[in-house]
Image (tube, rainbow, N blue to C red; front, side, top):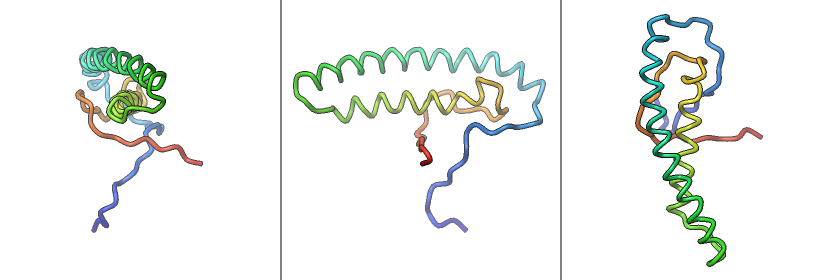
Amino acid sequence: MTDGTPSQQQLFVFEHDAGRLELLIRIVYWILIAIVLWVYGIIACICLIVQWLHILILGCRNEALSNLIKGYLEYMIHVLPYTYFMTDKRPDIMPVPVKVFEES
């Protein structure tokens, strides 16, 4: 039974077992993820420049620009465990909504 609250899981967890076949599939997957990250990163960089100008001129942040930049950072963190051999669980190639929390 679920109470409607989203589930949380730690992203960077050691997994002992690793699949050899997944290691070969990972190469193709890396290429696809790299292309998406590259395009998304260029867009996020442009948004950073526009956000900087927005803050300089108007003295406040633009929420849409901030959300796009945040989405890029969340996607990058979402794919890191797979790209750094920490897990065999494949992330989605296209960005999906994820939340990143800092434990205090």
